[in-house]
Length: 301
Image (cartoon, rainbow, N blue to C red; front, side):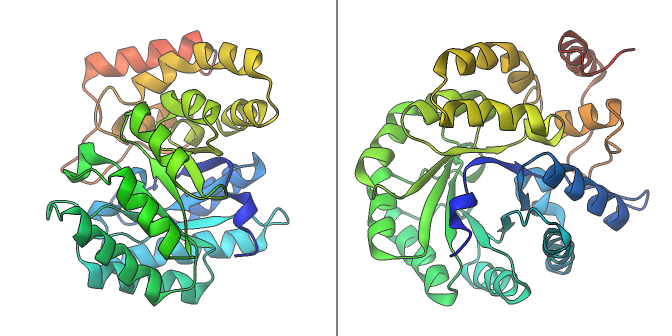
């Protein structure tokens, strides 16, 4: 866990570039990873924003391989967090062990979706994964997608019982719950925002940074935002929160990653191609995204 101190500021939940046949575009992915690293972001491969739900395990392996290889080539040696969650404990263990084998620095473990396990079952699930690897684990609570909330008491039990469960990505939108998590977990437990628009609030309570969607398109700006808070310049951070708020919200005007992929294409970063059942934003929403990008001087049309 030598690089665990890098799990702060910004970890980009990277979008995944596809070729016309919707296979992973390796060349573009490598270029995009370098873009993130050069702009001082740590990287998450195969998170929700990377469309992990529609990629096979072989494609998960390929994306992890690429991310680890590019990180190892970089002088900045970023933290590589690999999405290795599943609604099958057996599959989550398999993905986690692969991530460890190839040299990922940590794994992100989402609450099992669709199955809706109760809290004691979640403890068993995450404990089994923690026992299968030595990598640091970041839990991921996103009840709007999984249908099950990971309760603060459950998080606390896991944090105190498993040394390699080191943090959580909070995307519940419930600031009261997040406050309880910070209050009832060890002092060194890493709490990260899983929602760009909540980053200011979570870091004000003691959170360490954000696993960000917006940093796909403005990595250095999001790094500046979080770094400002880590340096206790809360007036500047408040101004940046208000400046970026419209972008944070419009990137979720439809299901992520549709809006951010559309924005990335408009900005010349990456094609907006996605795998169904997700599709690009409606034209009316595209206009709203374009308007926000123009207002922030991110594009000129």
